[in-house]
Image (cartoon, rainbow, N blue to C red; front, side, top):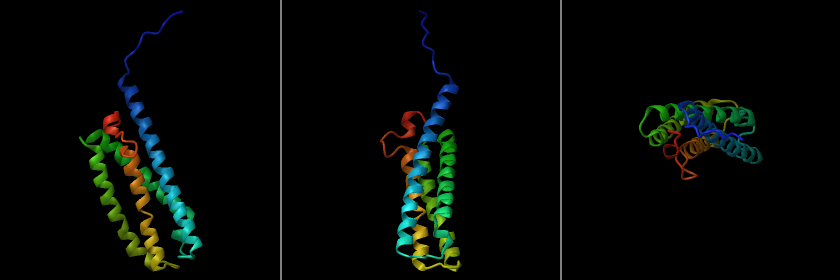
Length: 153
């Protein structure tokens, strides 16, 4: 029986490992954010907060929540390769993006057919789960193993 000598991981092996961890963390953020926002849509429907507001329905909410988390994952990947402290930089950028994301909701949604003040507020609140999930999962804050310490960054 022949034994295979221990080989050192190559740069490609390490890069694939980092990519795999980032995809897993981004996927977790995506699932959690879409699930939380789906519950918010359900509760909004049950309470008849804005029954005729198309923005406050499962399709648009799931698609836009997913797009936000995928975008956040791409931003984190770029930061992980290009800055010294990607977790801190990403967290600050995500908080700034969250604050800025409220502006179109506040400016556009109130004029939409079926909009109510409470419906607009709920849509604004729905920006929080993707931001929080992205910060928590991409930076590893939940597990206590930040990517900077696990080799992702």
